[in-house]
Amino acid sequence: MTPPVDPSLAIAGGPDTHVTALLPATAPPPEPARKINFFKALLLYWLLPKRYGPHLAVGSWKRALLAQVLSVLVFLTALLPALPGRISFFSLDDWREMAAAKVIDMATETAMGKMSWISVLLVLLSIPLAELALVLLSILIMPWYAGGDRAGSVFKRSLKSVYWSTTILIPLTPPAWLFTAYRVNPYQWVDKHGEPLAVGVLLLVVGLPAVLFMRMLLAGGTRYVGAPEGPAFAPREPRCDDCGYLIIGLPLEARCPECGLEVRESLPGGRRRPTVWQENEFKPTGFADLLRLQWVVLTRKDFFKRLPVQSGLASARHFWWGTWCLMVLATLLALRLLAVFVEKEDDFIGMLMTGALAVLILPLLLQALMMFTMCLHGQLCHGLRDYRGSAVVCYYASPLMWPGPLLLVLALAPMALPVERLLHEIAVPSPLGGWLDGMSLYMVGVLLAFLISLLWWALRLNRALRDIRHANV
Ligand SMILES: [Zn+2]
Image (cartoon, rainbow, N blue to C red):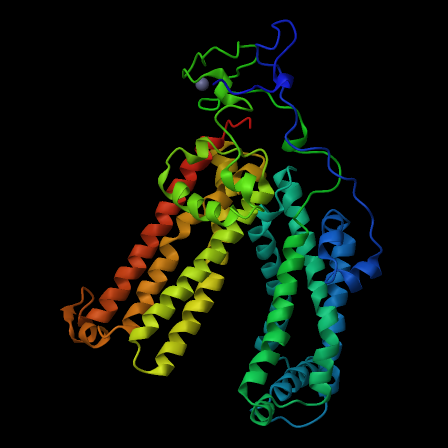
């Protein structure tokens, strides 16, 4: 059966049978930017990131920088109660006192003319270093901010969002103030209240702000607001999906004169169709489709030739989060199964904690790095100016990361299985002199396999980006 062709694609004259001169823009006109009251944003951004974020991200630099400076200054007031007093080695707040006292000492010394250059330099350097870290963070999250605007605009929005996200320090100031004012000694506190409660409080004090900060950071990129300027908001010339030949005016039934691909295949209703996941993600069968698509992405070499990349960024992003959850679940399950063989309980808890932490953080970090590299690579080598397409590809390619969790489990396996002693007994001469035991050899093998898997992921992504460079759909 011939797939239906969007009537807007054909030109008048050759009644509905020839390719039009221009395809419509791939994104609807964005909502206009609003100016948000500065103090409202300063105090409430951590609560309402989705509502404020996109508008703050296109606001002025002055406001974004001022918000950052004010947040840091407000947070520093929490150190004030700690200023006077003596120093004890084991108390956190005393350490903070020492830092504050050091700053004052340094100021005095500098004023009196005897400079301790290194400490002054360190303090002075810490400011640009922290700023540099913020810029690096904004570069890393750029693909999340792909909204159809130009790359420069995407970078500006992500950096302003990072500045605004530092306002998380403001709601953290009262608890930090209480902590220093009451001179809480963490060790005594744990002794008094027991470990489970201490872990709970730690999660609340460290984990919750971290999650809120992440949410603020990413929320600004959920949609683009402002002027419709950028590759997604202009009409495009239709091209052959395989070779990029301009197919304007060709009959729909014809083939591309360059590569022979059917003209119809390069247009909506052609070979790029929404994925099953895109259609079912919120239905009960969504989970089954998530599982099935993992396998499809890993095995079907032409997957990215059939993926629509000019739309569906949100469901692609959901697909990535779903894949990440699957990876966490599978790793924890595998470690739990391994634990059956563990003899000492301490070993098991250590293994589970290491595995859980690594599988929570590692895929996120790797994905962010890979997405950034690939968006840049796509722009420079394949001419993909609209980061949305590259981001869709990177999100759908996330199952290519499966060797990572698998190798993590393999790396931790000797801790549980009775092979650890055996591995330690093996000895082979090392190329660097001396001897290598079986355990080190095994770890080097796992590391090598991991590096190879990273390379494989990058090569597959490169091919995927090449497959989408002329995509009309
Ligand atoms: Zn062609």
